Image 1 (cartoon, one colour):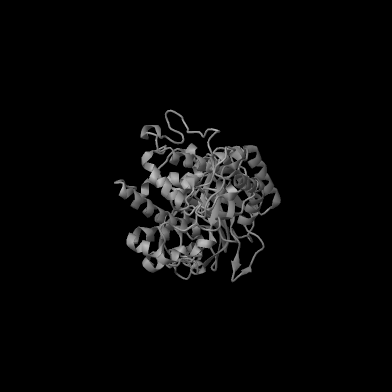
Image 2 (image 1 turned 120 degrees about the vertical axis):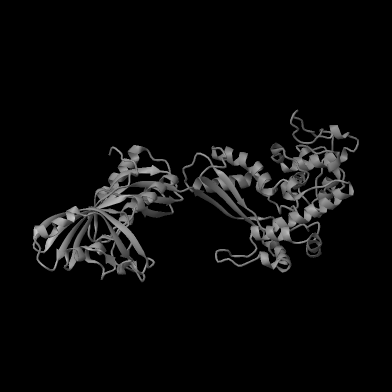
Length: 533
């Protein structure tokens, strides 16, 4: 319904008399014209007053606002009188009117709406829009569109329920009905008004799928206690949560309102709701960009560098890590708040990663800068590589969140190639280890290694050694090249981990064996795509 008709007059008069603002009246009258809500507040009040005066109009001629089609709006003649003040409920006083537009109801004289608590009044004005846009511009984000979100005080739902019951009762007297779902949602109406203003001021379109979010959190301390009766009537709806400051969340209040009986509601809450003294306050105006994902492959050349920060009992063991050496440069260039590092498997602190490197991805949270050319990414990669001789990065590129799934899928399905320097307690000859080259698809039972048992669940995992190739060095040393299933514990396969991995190199050679050095030679995950850099 995009216009007011004769049957709306009792509702308009009722809500005006109880201190409801014009835009909330339109919501209860099911007005769906977005353009109408955007008209100046004082014009809307004047038009509502004129609408109520027009008792002689026929229903088909009582159209109000933007009628589509045709486009038409009742306008006040200059000879008509306009209100210059409001009574204590925000209703126009019956005083002599003048024919000067400047005498129209000004925002400064408007009492706070008893339903929206001022959301559809003061916070729809240009001054507030500019305040939001100044916050956005000062945050220095890159964005090509925006999505606007708003958090409303939960007591607004209680007040809206009270107003709906009032209107429902009045319409019942006229043989009409109004379902809760017929009312235009407050958030929806607010966005109809705000979106065009923000879009014009920011110079980009509003887009519900945009990754750049502008959010406003409203509060109304004066009426914070209005939800408490619901906790007594519906205690099951309000359960404490660790991450919530109050049990009176919007969802909990809505759940309670659905559960409470109308007669019980009316016993505890005034209908109509009383007019507040103060407007809502905008507690927070925040901006947030959706995460950006950067992927690549890294080589690790140090045997004294963990993949991630090595901290035990709050004490840092080593000064840096692969994660930090890469992320510190990305964080600086993308101007992000934080990051999350992930990779296709991980190597121990004393293990090198050679060959084409190990695939990794970094999620950059709330980045200010999001647009990078291929050349800029190449320069960023070079900056990382020039900063340390312990690591090297290749194929650095922007990827989607969905693409990262391909890296994770390969962790257990793909193969990895290793090179291990093995020591034996008893002397060996080349022929003593030659038989290892003939072993194919060797199945292992690996109980969770003792060295990782503090952070991994105890389990027996079946793993496969696809191939082995031995390289004799001397009587007590040889190098073993292995191609294995991803997730195989190579160190434990060599020394046996006190019998927790069976079979192992020691049991196969019938002697004690240990591993002195280990290198990852390849991680056979075909991601991210190789770049010509």
